[in-house]
Image: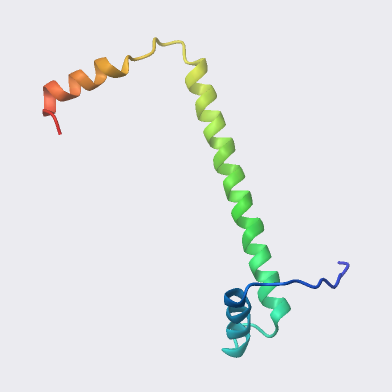
Length: 86
């Protein structure tokens, strides 16, 4: 793994957060805090991508479904008849 040194600028609140994490002993260095934050960001983006792929798949299943569509106003009318208006 190639290591590259970057210089970053953070708003005061985020810089304090990084320093506090190091001061409490949760992390050994500022760089370690930033690396963990970036790993979490990468993981979060992967989860978003998985959710988006699932949603696209479900949408395509719905589009490909040969059954006739259900009219929304019809459905709400039936629900109101059964349960009353909210």
